[in-house]
Length: 322
Image 1 (spheres, one colour):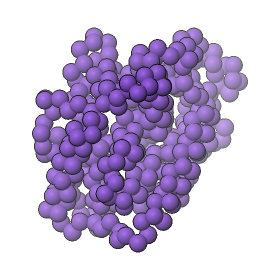
Image 2 (image 1 turned 180 degrees about the horizontal axis):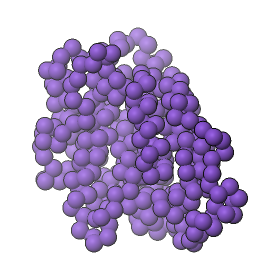
Image 3 (image 1 turned 120 degrees about the vertical axis):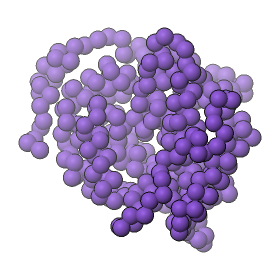
Image 4 (image 1 turned 135 degrees about the vertical axis):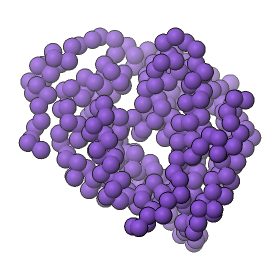
C-alpha cells in the first residue's frame, strides 16, 4: 500500500473526494451494518418463501437474461426513471451482459451465485442502465474536457447506486428473494471499501482482507476474494471504495437537489443530468448541478504530496513489514 498520508493526499487532490480515509472507513462500517440489518430482516420476511434456485442449463439462463432486460427497460420507461435514447440498442444481445453461462467444477463463483439466481442486480449495475448504457451515453458528451474524463466514483458509484435505488423504486416488489441479493451486493461493496482503505494504509494484508470479506459476505469464495484484493491493491488508490462512497455521494446529491426543487424535482431529470453531463468526480457534478460549494471549496488549495508526507512524519512508509 501507499501509506495513509499518500492515500489521503490522493483522495483529496486526484479523486476530489470530500472525505479522508478515516471518514471513508466510518461511512463504510455504517453501510456494512445497515446492509446486514436489511439482509437479516429481508431473510426473516421471506422465510416462508422458496429459495431462489440456480438454473440448470444455459438455455434457462439465456431466457432469464432476456426476461430481465425486458422487465428493466419497461420499468425504466413506465416509471419515468431515465430517458432511453434512440441510439441505445433494443435487445440484451446487442447491449451485452456481464456474466456468461459457465459450468465450473467447484460450482458457480460469487458473482455467478447471484447473477444465475436473478440477473437483475448485475444487469442494472453493469449493463442497463449501468456501465454499458452509461458508456454509450457518455460517448455522446461533446464538451472538449468532460468527454475525456471517466471518474470511478461517478461510474462505479452510478452502477452501485442503481441497485438499491431500483429496490426502493419498486422493481423488486414482485421478487422478494431478489431483494436479498441486492443486500448481499451491498455487503460486499461496503466490506471491500474497508479492505481497500486498510490495505493501502498497510493495516491489513491481502490474506487478512480476504478473510474479513468472506466473514461478512454470503457466497463469497476464495478465488473472487483474492482477485478483488489484488485488483484494489494494484489499481490507483481508492478504486475499491468508489462503489460505496460514490453511490453515497450520488444519494447526497439527489437529496440536495430534491430539497432545492421541492415537489418540482423529477428523478428522471436527475438521472438524465448524470448521463448527459460527463462522468466527472461527483463533488464537481454536485457543485455544477446545485451550486453548493461546501465540498469543492475544500478542494482548491493544493498541498504538494512531498510536503503532506513530510508534515505527517511517516514519509508514507508502511507501519509494519507486511
